[in-house]
Length: 256
Image 1 (spheres, rainbow, N blue to C red):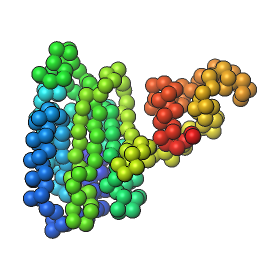
Image 2 (image 1 turned 90 degrees about the horizontal axis):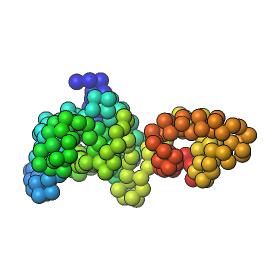
Image 3 (image 1 turned 45 degrees about the horizontal axis):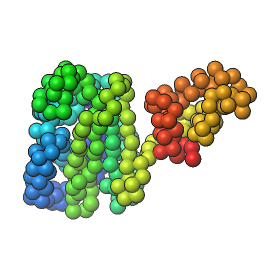
Image 4 (image 1 turned 45 degrees about the vertical axis):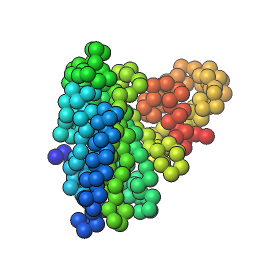
């Protein structure tokens, strides 16, 4: 087990879940319903038992999309994405445990990652030439079962083919508050500290619709300098273009 996974398990263990507070009979009935729905929709669904620290269910839909039924979802992940996902999971866990207990299960994390397609099978990638390639997928994860004290017990994930299959070399992550419907980035502080004062200033002007030439004139610097700052902003916010950067900044509360 690598250090990141050990750290995640340490965070899970902080909950102090007790066997007496778990109703496995109820979960087995719910799991049977989830399995039935996954079979009908041919979805890629998985469930993790936080108490037992293991995968409790992985649907047959993985065979259709990836050509294999994995023992863990991680084994399908691109090697370069595993560390990023683990880091995001650790930061998300720290964010969750910073909240009042009654709010901790109100969030869904959404990742876009690369996973290995072993063979096209008969599903969404049949005849697409995707066999043996890395494909972009979205993974939506949330708590679906708690113990008798309201502590997160079963985490379910749904993996689907991402609409955008443009080759990428990074993981994307956003968080949805299930009560308010608001998407946001709980790591806003780290993003804010990552941007220099000048980058923050330029990002704010970008959000107001100003072009590089207009920003340069307003700040009294060259257009080339503005363009270099824009490149740095996009890299730090993990965005492919200005619109993505502005949206990420808004979710993080860095701009209005």
